[in-house]
Length: 188
Image (cartoon, rainbow, N blue to C red):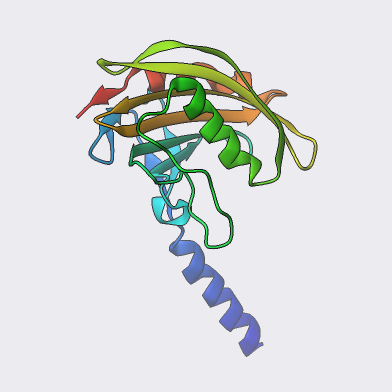
């Protein structure tokens, strides 16, 4: 009985320390590089768990659709950190196609297969020239994921926002909200 009470108490303590927080529909700074303004509430996961990912947001739950925000990725840094996996590194002279390949190469290290990028095109990242691309890939489980990305290299640092979700149901369900967030970018 004491063991049950101990485990219950431990579970309550650990869930109380969960790194989730509410992203309210108001301007939110992503590091010191840019801000975005969601039009609805999202849930955010703490950046400490994901290396260089500064924010990771979801509406329906991770794995069902999320937005990832990177800011100020410097020359020679990877999008993800790992002590075991050697991820490709960002170079400040990369062209848009190479940045898309950087993201694809990073995900391919995490058991993602058949990664494709399409529709690479110029786009504004706040007030600066950036680019957009669409992406799709299969998880090791066979689930097809679609996504869209907005990026720019500002002062030789990569700024990147990626929305991705399972193609069936979830991608289109929250795509409009993700697009509104991307359209709201303001450089700081």
